[in-house]
Image (tube, rainbow, N blue to C red; front, side, top):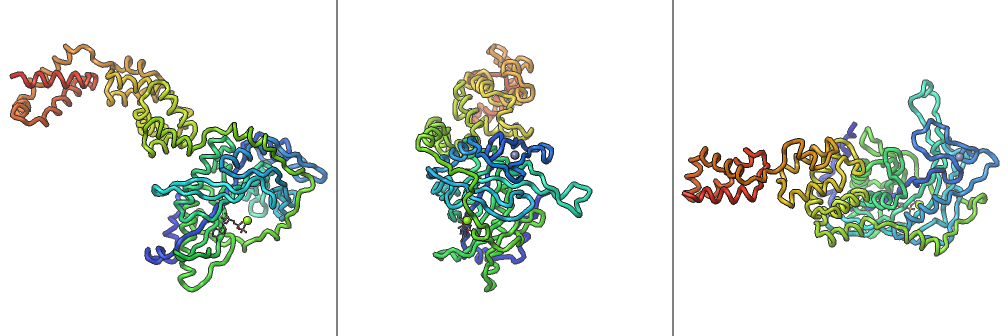
Length: 499
Ligand code: ADP
Ligand code: ZN
Ligand code: MG
């Protein structure tokens, strides 16, 4: 299943010295399915996974005479995305017809936006190796998705392709970045932050497996220090973060090898072949004039009044960057922790709910990142489906703070809470993990441990204080960690110093 490493697939092995002489320039074109219940220009459902061709009507099948009506909700979500990406939303934009012939496009054109897009001139911040950088966003426009060609899984697949029109007419936005990216790592960080912003604003579910987020990469190379850009190649089908990184790495090496051998890069569209781990030529570059764009006469111009824009802006939730900064200052947690905890809005909410329920921010941050996320990850669950609620976790952590249980016991309690969905109190009672509050019995165990380890007692009394830890360890073992560590320290110190 794992594709061959892109490096391994490169035909010409480049030395690090040669590679270092070049710099990559990349820009991404990202298609995102808007989270609407119905399609962009008709009332058909957008539900993923329904039986083929059950969500269709004369409009999205392109039957003659059918007229489109634009989905108001799609516009709202597109404006939200544009504002989250600091774009300038245009008061007036327009749908255009992008004409081409392909079986997945029944009208013979795709409704898109061309010379008047919904929004222009935004940016998104990324951080790579501790350095922050703004990546420009050229434009954000609205369009409809094409249908899906199916080539496999049919008895007549050798002769025919089948088409599922359920996806045809689903609303998308396309977000085009400036050629500001300088490495596969930067491209990765850009796509990560873009996805996060779109998830936070609930513009899209951004599910890459079901195709809600699709990415094409444009990449060229030039000698480091050169002013002009090199000839770019567009790579299609980068539908996972791994493909994006591998495809760019592969393509960078391929282009450097061409230039090093005295050749020149051909401007074209290439496809990332997942199985082979390489890009392959798909078609020569198409230009805007090939599509004979013209304004769609069936659709009115899209007007976004300043009042509407302001209303949507006011509804925008706190965005990832702002949340990260606030977590660092408000909770005094590290930038790294803040980064992990703001990975999704749901995770950030969980953390804040735990803190509100009384957990110390630092300890909540640690326990969520280590124990909780690992356990969720192991069973493939999202934070929203955590068997341990934020309040239940906070209750557990408060017990450590009150010296009721040790951290080690708390880990065992959390494991049980996760397994059973029970509260800390229930697990502690059921497992006999409640702390030994009676100091008399702790002292008795301390005396026994001392009596059984006279050699170590002599060492301690001879000045080897390191042995003290051994005694603490033994007592904790005997009490299964249920003794209060502070009490154990005090009792052992007193007993060991008595002659
Ligand atoms: P086209 O005319 O091929 O559509 P655009 O100028 O619209 O090209 O850019 C499409 C995408 O390619 C954008 O994301 C842009 O940032 C990126 N891009 C443009 N020129 C280059 C280049 N020389 N190298 C890498 N990426 C580029
Ligand atoms: Zn329809
Ligand atoms: Mg273009």
